[in-house]
Image 1 (tube, rainbow, N blue to C red):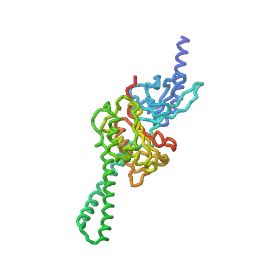
Image 2: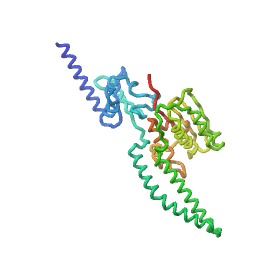
Image 3: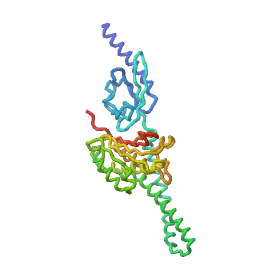
Image 4: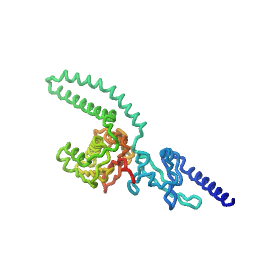
Length: 330
């Protein structure tokens, strides 16, 4: 009877301890796990983490069974998304735990923000397209002007209109981003190296000659081929056009079956831009709307993939990495 009472008292103490620990992690919307030392088992989790697991309880499970870690200090995959892990040690009742916070990259706009931006773009396109088309029509009507000075003036107006139409076309790409997403299953496998080399031949030889391709895996890349081509075209173009990296070499590296790196030289992306990289209209390039990275991220996210800035230094250059949903773990 005394043994049974002791077990009940210990269970009560453990429950109170777990509740006390959970109070330390309950004030954030990010998924948070408490890892017990030295077992490495999940001792507790906040509501965001538990609800993301659905009917499956993570408590008492090894962390590696719940979260996929790409590499030490690298991003982790959980609940169909990529996160940056942040760790700290906690001492509680003479025991040590690791508090693991999964932070969503702040540089990525959420779905609600993107929806609002795309709706605003739709209104802008609707309001501008008609008057601009009318202006183009008037220019066409007076194209036979003989006075040389008037011709120069009209030529400048025509160039300005052409530039505005190019901007409109770029905005259309973001507004109709869903058109780039196919209905094929997530389990498609692609020949990433062939896709990359096909993309390179769309560039002029002088640009193509400064792009190197390295394939470090013999397996297929776990992504839909058509969408992979769209994403890599946008990322390679971004690397080529980086304002401080003009004429710098570009490296496209297939690192694994679910990771591709695109690296270019030049000075690092400034902090104020890096913190909002995937928002439209954030760019360091002249005459550019910053649509490319936003569009690439939209396409990637629909396949549980993410594009992360993994290197941003004078020594290592600027690297964007495409992380796809990890392969099934044993």
